[in-house]
Each structure stands twice: as structure tokens, then as C-alpha cells.
Length: 225
Length: 221
Image 1 (cartoon, chains in turn brown, blue):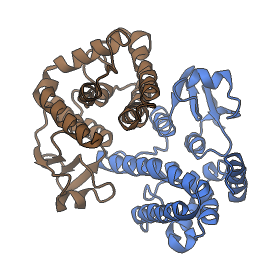
Image 2 (image 1 turned 180 degrees about the vertical axis):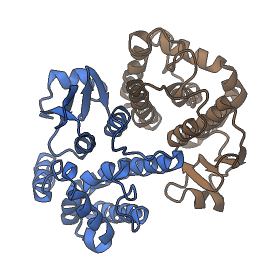
Image 3 (image 1 turned 45 degrees about the vertical axis):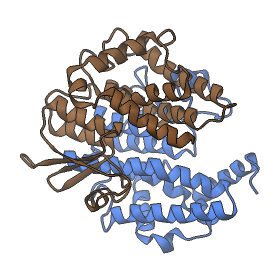
């Protein structure tokens, strides 16, 4: 597989795709990018990811890998320099746990805010903030206490999984007219997010926040009408 | 005889397929551990302290450190005890194994719950979905001895506990797993020949009895 070409099927505003792009960039690995129209998926995409039919899909030579965190672990194991995951088994378990938490619990509870009725919104926001508090606590006095990033001095898997996609929060706060993640309640999380956004590789890879926020606001306005 | 590894405790619930994944992995590695049965309707202070986020089993506590989420636990076990590796060494094969274990995680439990909880059209949809899910998994297994090929591996560990639920799925959904996916049934039988599996899984009728218990609790006929 050494020297085999890399091709990433993605969609420019998908944070799952951003995760993979960021990792490839952090590793200094070159790849070809294929933009997919998700309302009209290419034959190639459907062939490479017949089970879920989603982006991102990474093709290494003719071998497809699907699901963002699985793709990232593959990249990390194939290109071993500048590791994205820690080497210690317990720390790896902690990182994987929190990544599952972000994708299976935190993000769906954010989605619930968007789908809530006027009466249910307060409870949905509270629930999301309670979930976010777990990550705030990790940074404040838990496993990641004193760290610039969840991964330590350098961006790691949890930073990438949590950091990509937070433009959904900005867009939603704007459209709904309420503050969901405020600095007063989440000082450590806010500070971490600033560090993440300031990181050179994040600036180089992720499309401008304004553009992403505009895109999401468009989706939300369609959703609410 | 395997010596007890320093301080390995598993917080678990007898019928949980997620807990069984951990039991199977520990047995495959020959790790001795203390098994602690939890009452899920009266959770112990230890469980609530070890998994404050989800308050769920299984939790593996190794030298005082808690590890949560069954597939995270299985990967941890695989990395700490390197004998009889569950994940292959090739990165692409590892990615494929993770993909299918993740697929089991995303699909089986949720669909199985719909099968016993719902009625009418919704149950019929759950039946169709379950058959589709099982057929996809059977397609991945193909003619291999195990999902891992010749060796019992990560996907086998992730999926085999659900084989004890096949009888319950069939009964609730009115279909036959053997008829729809004969290779899966044969695979499950082969897995049961391994002591790690046969000692961890419960009799399908006992599982179905437990489902009956759940149905009563949720007021399902």
C-alpha cells in the first residue's frame, strides 16, 4: 500500500469530513478530494460505502474506509509520525470514551434543541449543557486538567472530534436567539475552543467559520419554515 | 493456571450482551478478574462513581482506573494483554473489523428493542430491518470460519452475544434466523464451541424469559 494514492469523498460543510481533512493535514499526507452532492450521490460513493452511503469515505488505492473516527485511526496506524491518539492504553480508552460521548450523547442532545417545541426548548438546552459540563469538568479538574488541548500540547483525536462542527452552535444560537455555550458557565471549554480555532492547521483546513455558519443558518431556516 | 491480574474488576449485568463482550475478551486472554453483578434498578455506589457519565454497565476497573463502553473496554483489553490478539495487525483489516463492530453497535440492539417493544406496522418494520441487518452481517462473514477469518476476533466478540437473542428476535418478529441467515446460525454454533463464549452466554430461552420480564415492565402485551 506504500505510495498508493489517497482519495477522500466529502462534502465541504460536513464536520465529519473536516475531521479527516484535518488529520491528513496534521500528518502531512497528500490526497485527492472529491466533492459529493449529497442530494445526488455519485456511483463511486455508493459503491465504496454501500452500507451507510455517507461521507466521508477514504480510498487508499482501491480500499475504502468509512466512518470518520475509524478512518482517523486507520490514518494514525498507517502513518505513524505525529500521532493523533496517545500511546498509553488507558489514555486511549479515555479518549475513545469521550469521542463516543461526543458523537452518541452530546451532539444528539444538541440536535434535540433544534427539534424541540417552544415549551421543550428550555429542558433540551439544560440537558445539552449538563452533557457539556462533563467535558468542561475534564478540562477543569479531570484527566485533561492543565492542558491546552484535550490531547495535551498538541491537537489529538478528541480535540478534532469535538472541535470540528461547533459552527453548528454559533449558527443555532443566532437563529434561535439564545446563548447555549456561554463563557461564564464554560470557561475552560471556551478557552479550549479558542486554542483549537487558533491552531495553524485548523485555520488552513477548515473552511471559514462565517461561510459554514451561513450554510447552517440556511439549513436551519429551511427546517423551521 | 492464569494468575489473577492485579485488580481487574468487571461491573456487569448477567444478560447484557455488552457485558458479555468483555467477559469473552477477558476469557480469551486468560485474565482472571472479579465479576460484580449489578442490580440495574438499584445501582451500586461503585458503579455510579466508576461511570458517572452514563451510570451503565459494563465498566472494567483495572488497577483502580475505570474504563467504560464495551468496545472501548474490549480494545483496551486487547492492547494491555497482547496474547491471542483480537484485532488483526494490518491497519486496513483493523479498520474493517472496527467498521463491522461499529455496525453491530449502531444497528442490532436498537432494532432488537423495537422488535419486542412495538406492535403492528412498527414491529413489522423492525422485523424487515432486523433481517436486512443480519443478512448484511452474513454477507460480511461469507464462508469464513469466523468474522476474523481463521481466528476468533474483534467482530466475533462484538456480535456473538447477540446470538443468544436470536430466539427472542424470531419469536417476537415471527421469522426464522436459520431460514434467513443459515451461515450466521452455523457461525454462532462454532463460537459456542469456544469456552470463552459458552461460559459467557446464557440459554436463549432464559434470555427470552428476561425479554418477557421487560415487556411486562414496559406494559407491552
